[in-house]
Image (cartoon, helix red, strand yellow):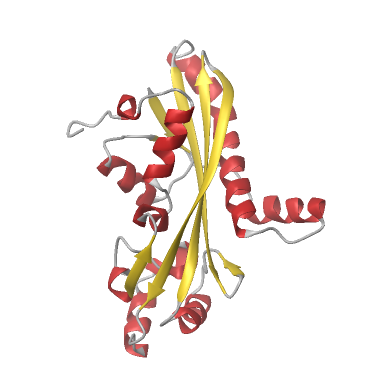
Length: 222
């Protein structure tokens, strides 16, 4: 059974590969800001962190789901069962939602705020089942983990970290699986949630659709 990952995140790909899964990665054509803004206008209130990540995970999964209908037909996989996974993450501190900073200036502002403190990383998941070339059942879930940052990080360390470019394109301006890991002192919750994809949550979603988790293992070491 093939897993399509509606993301080009290297961290999510590495996480799945370590879990024995080699997904087919397809970049979703979703304007995250526009989707979230439209939903907030419709509701008439700001989106909560949970609503935000589930909404965007679903939008990404559905976008790629539409694209692979044609891919399945071309590959002759119309009778097979595949799964499409969308994901999204935000970091929350002081009840403010933070996504990717994109600039060094914003990344520095984030770190000035969160150094020595604890925030929450929300990761949304949306899984769509494709059967006989047709998208059908779908399930979603949100995982949350508390992240505490070291209180003794000095300005030189922050400058060096930001200069690498790593924190510019990840939610909250930090990672736990690369250069940012030494700046984090505690995680409460599933650590893979902080990477952007909770493996225990994904397993539960796969099982809820009636599939075996090992049926996704397709790497030699699995």
